[in-house]
Amino acid sequence: MDVGLLYSRIRPDEKLLLSELRDRGHEVHKVDVRKTTFGLDAPPEPLGACDVVLDRCLATSRSKYASRFMAHYDVPVVNSPETAKLCSDKVETTLALSAAGIPTPETTVAFTKESALEAIESFGYPCVLKPVVGSWGRLMAKVESRSAAEAVLEHKETLGHYEHSVFYVQQFVEKPGRDLRVLTVDGEPIAAMSRSSDHWLTNAATGAETATFEIDDEVEQLAREASAAVGGGLLGVDLMEIGGKGSGEYTVHEVNHTVEFKALNAAVDVDVAGEIVDWLEAAFAAPDPTAPEVES
Image (cartoon, rainbow, N blue to C red; front, side, top):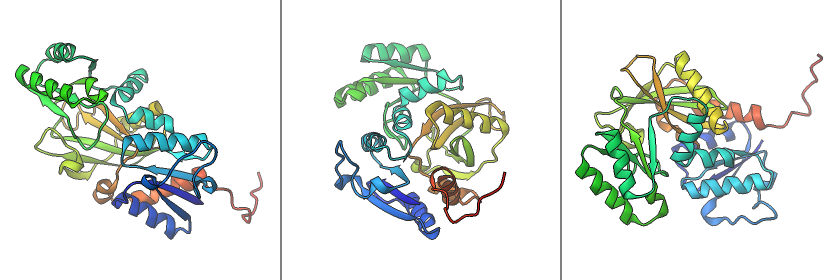
């Protein structure tokens, strides 16, 4: 295959993918989106000749628009712009999960500080206030009192950007000190890990301890359904256990479309990059013209 890689920084995740692709003899074209322009008529070289383009942009805005341009050029892209649009916005993700009947934390969206405070009061304390766009647990707040709510809302209001005037208020889920990440390719779970911390945020990026997690039937089903709800592709589905560790009851709180997997790769026995490339080959590689035909 000829594989394009859209990036703004080569992280350990991209290094794993690049190494696996090159070891298998695939031609890889790295394109730094910070130095590239996207016109209306033709894709930037050499992306037009690629069998598939991987969107590994760090910034949400770059990811959304770069993948949209790839689709405009009729170049296959992972993930699709529709999936990027849904997963990059927590409101869109929550609506997609809810519409698919997937259990997700109770959520209310408000557009003014006053109505957001009413929503928080209706939830009771603690509850969670999240930015509609963002990752790695940044700008998330566990709100434990009215005075804290007033302070956080005022701070968000003064930030100025319109996204901070969309107040995403969510139920605080009493998880058992951990949450779960399942990596899927078109709904097929590759591997899963738990992320544990004494802090209420359990992102690996914030220092949570990771360990392999054996995927049970319920987690597999929810991961498949969550993937389908946002359009499939290469995704990280995040779940929390409700009812305690090992209860077998879960809620899906996020789906990640430019998913990082270095922590997962270190926590499990699975070669995550190898599994991803297996899927890319099956989904996007052109048939080998020298291969013998199989009689039906």
